[in-house]
Image 1 (cartoon, helix red, strand yellow):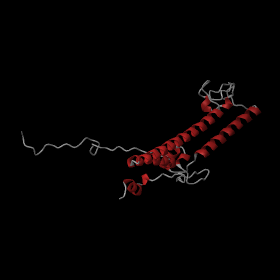
Image 2 (spheres, one colour):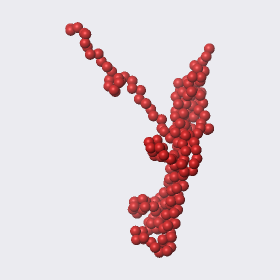
Image 3 (cartoon, rainbow, N blue to C red):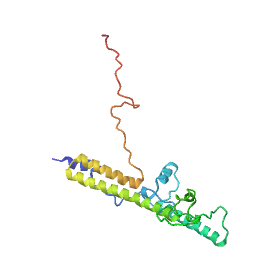
Length: 215
């Protein structure tokens, strides 16, 4: 006699353990030339643009590196102008307190990027705080994904302990969807069942009443 769980493990691929530590993606970075990267290595906008128009992708590491190099070049140019006395008239002599986590006082305009400086006094964050905030956000997003996957794995173990085939399939489906999102960068889409509706989204088709005799 073949048990239901045995049949499920043979014919339902979602009922087998999800092993993802050797997964690889299908994306390449056109800057650092790394191959077969997962979707999580790229921003959501970059992936959407790639799927729509094609072209080269740029991973998050390369984007962060380019932004850092650009900031360093901008700071070097401003410092050189200040040292030589060739300061543009557009640069203000105003000094501000950073509204970011460092809270440093009396910072010159060169300590802020253009976007932050335009926000006005009391709302501007210095370059270092902006950069740290970007890193913290990326780390938080990664941790959130890891926490969700860890919780999903725990649900799978709990479902297996019950021996309920339906619960096992449901739990492993959720885990597989989370792991697939990490690889492809696409979130799972829940489709509507469409029960009780006819084609075109209208209600159930009713009989026209033809052929019935008059009362």
